[in-house]
Length: 352
Image (cartoon, rainbow, N blue to C red):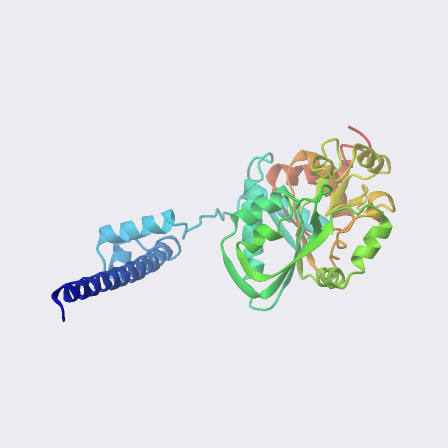
């Protein structure tokens, strides 16, 4: 072989060898990283769940105490460990018991904390959603909309649940044709591997006729039928005061909001407006709401995520009317509910 050609061949072989070594090294580093995360997960579980000391973890994993300490820290920094407070706070337990008895609730969780913050309710709701999704048996889960529910989805861990179906109860199209910001099924799809069924509809149709035509479409009809078979539904409850979510987000005009209030509406769930007795109104925007009907508490667990004094009349009405049979709320809202039950709503329909 010509000397120059031999040099070029040797150089090419050296380059290929170097590339092969680099690939092997990358694979080795990735495998090492995966093994280290596995060890961190084991260490984190042993420390936070098993209650082992770092010395005991070191012995079980055959590493030094310093390595065990670093693995526990890695488990936290990589988000492998999520800490949730689970303490039977006496006052909250008493309030939960009172509300359960008064409204025959299947699910009730009362959390300590400031009702102006939705963080606590969101975390508790995330845990409840994850509990349902970890069921081995297939579940149909219906999802409403709203700020608290969106915050709950953002708190969720990743869940592999291909046996379940998650269906939206409400449309995801705003009046200007854009996607509704608080329609959460798309956020959920980022965290949950399950069959997702969005509701490709406007939140409120332009007319009752348009709603009938939309609901007659085969794909929409099947999605509505699936929502009607929900085992569990997670919903927010909106008030219909001057700053009502439906109005603030552009789904109701001032005239529509005021007409609902004048007719006695105090709240809404996925767009369906109801009065102080929890009875959905006839006509008005309810004739045009494209959402699926609120699942029946006779066949589903319908869990509301609600907090704050502004929503008290709407929440009280929903409980009185049996629109929900589950509740995750804060301590002050729960106490106000028990007081309001005997005195009636603080804000009559139509008041400011």
